Length: 307
Length: 187
Ligand code: SF4
Ligand code: SF4
Image (cartoon, rainbow over all chains, first blue to last red; front, side):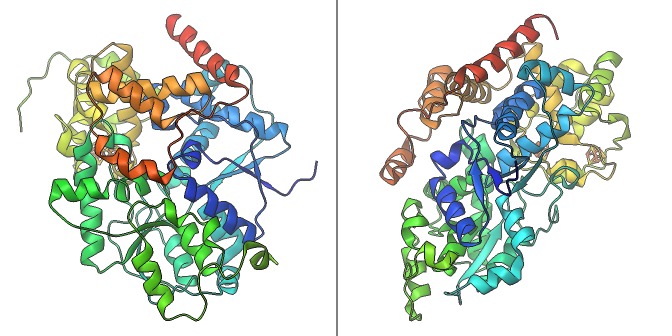
């Protein structure tokens, strides 16, 4: 079956707390002619909780999704979420590991029949589309918008596993945002941990770690933080008020998914980008951006961009 | 820093950690790079380099009873920065698996969150934030410390109040079943 689509794994948060990431990912991929085909009846990859319990269990939970992709005739998987990405990637490695592999297959109840790859949406856009084509799609450059790109701890490390960008100083998102016309401020905490899911059992982990990220971003004069991870986004955005309360600060820095800003630069309608889902109000930043423009957001619809 | 009295080394423990993690823990020369970059260190009872030393020294009880193995956020900073290429985060992961198998209590809140998250996956095939939160409160017997966030997130229409259930949820439940069977048979 010839199928040049990528198998798309939205991840659980894509249906809940990171809806806007899923929406804007689909819109941007459509505009860039990246064909996504949802993995049918996909299931949770197990996320951090599963791999902290048992590697066999977490491998089996992730691997079920490759089984589903195989049944659709798809081998290459992509997902916006770095946490899912890592789980899916680790699962492919562990299935080949002589210790965990057989046990994982026993738990899964079957084995995979072909080779698979998994890449993030960020990697697909950066590598398969490339900066030139991205820049060519820009109809509404983000001129004057000062952003810090924040990759979080999962996206690029460890390099042997993730096989993408640089583990200490990744640049892919910087370059993409630059192609969209934004001004990139050098952010030294690009890959520092935001506290991840520790926010739930231990609030203070997040108020501390995320507090530092916000503090440095603010001191650099960033108007927005750009992210590629739902967990980072939630800690920085939803918990920004919590951080402010604990640390007696008063940050109001919007935290965008890179796909949202890319979509804006492509002139994709707001309704496809989900800016209204952000907790820290992005309007002041967006209206400032639009103030000196003749084109307003959403003038172009998705179909026109794709054409 | 507390001084700990090392008990008799349990060599079998060291060997098992090395086997399950696939890492040569003996290569650690205590440079402290892992600890320097560890974001969760502030919550640890033993810093990650000391955990590594204690694994080398076969201090099974100290390691498996530590809070550190539960608070590790698996951010991989240690793994990336270890000059000896030890995958330190996987060593932490494996120690936590062992602690769980040995029925160590660990850090209750972290366990409660893990358990309630996985429970939603087992039941619905996908994780469900609201369900995991409810479960967390029930398990941890304390109100969720994030209640202040509820009014912020509800109007965003993001948190599904009912879970997304997959069609083949039995397949996922079976994965958990076979995992539990294996555990019972002393995998
Ligand atoms: S970074 Fe590596 S060698 Fe250094 S203390 Fe940590 S584990 Fe040991
Ligand atoms: S993986 Fe765990 S031990 Fe290593 S730096 Fe991150 S939080 Fe610390």
